Image (tube, rainbow over all chains, first blue to last red):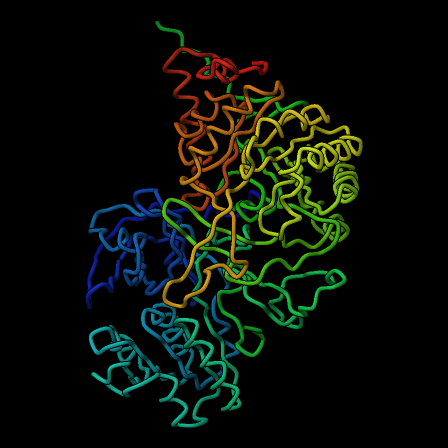
Length: 276
Length: 315
């Protein structure tokens, strides 16, 4: 029965380390050998909230090496607050790795990474892989204030160039991170980005202006995380290679796109194929 | 030497549908089942109620479609589905190897829709039973009308009944004044079982952006927040009809499920609970076994409705 041959993706992991580089930004290291081995850059996990009282939380896989993975989260509500309180030795159930990651080959050999806030978490593995494959990588990283720009040095250590921006001007460019790249003009072959939706929309506009293509990793509330509930959709061109099969719609329907599941067909899409 | 007591029998019967485990996965929450195959051993589930299908393709509502709220989840998916013809051509065959029961879910906008789609879907060998979704709150006024008007509920049920001999489960809405009255007419129209309840209508507003959080404005509330509403609905329906009830609404643990059973549900359905932890259905089944074993009760059927003095169903 083919359906049962898929390896189970539910894992009991154990917290191996925890740090809080800025208030409400927490990085949790986990002993999770199977996920560490299998994770592709840009994939995510669903973290079962320890109390079991809330819907699981989707988090991008930040680091993956040896038997360890890490997750970066910002405390924004009760679910992330619970996760942020985890300590070394605590158990955490994760489902994953899930979703399709970045299409690294299609990004080419000279890539601009654009991160907004903890969107950074989904870009370290792509950066490491691209650099290992001989690409040039430059990180454009924006956050609300200097302290919230965490871990840029990990990208530098991997060999990436780094430019910073803050909303309050406390470090780097005073303003949006996309403005940094816009000012430089077309200095990269492609863009890969992760961050809040308004930033990703701006990335899409910027890419069009610069005449390059951008892969954007969308952040959204997932319920199931595996494509079952159709709760996390985004409008996508029917011609996209990622568009789910869907028949011509009923008479009276004026929308000419399809809905793609961010958790299943994504979370990474080509920005010029999104209709948002 | 002590003889090991036989493991309690937690099977359930819904008309002609026999479930080895009394847990169905709620329609719309579990896709076609295969999406969860990498997270759960589907053989340990009673069955999967498939996502609802309609006569014509539906793109569904615009995003955002989900809003997590206190102890629950608001959704307004809007019955996105490829329509029955495409569904039969490309999707249904995938259910043939499912190691648990497969219940097709039919939604519609007219009595004729319910008859047509039920007949087309139920004709397939891969489908063990039909759930009639007359209670979707997220497709404009017409979607839920069938569950809120006794005459329409009766006509939709009668039409579906005439379209198939397979077990027919009708899913009721909590968004009514008297759910027992609707239950009675649906029973009289030939339903084999009732699913109680669908989601409760609700909404949430983004106070910073000064607008509703769901693109559809209103949605259906599910999760622990609605459990007491659902338990009462099962309690009331169990006093009004003799056909079996599938209890559903916020079940996350075996004790939650047992509340429904003791109120009068023969089986339970788990929807949003799967989003909390995909292992919830397995924990519910094993917890029910433990509960029965600890009390020396041989079968789940014995305790159905046992907290409800007005329970009229057969055990």
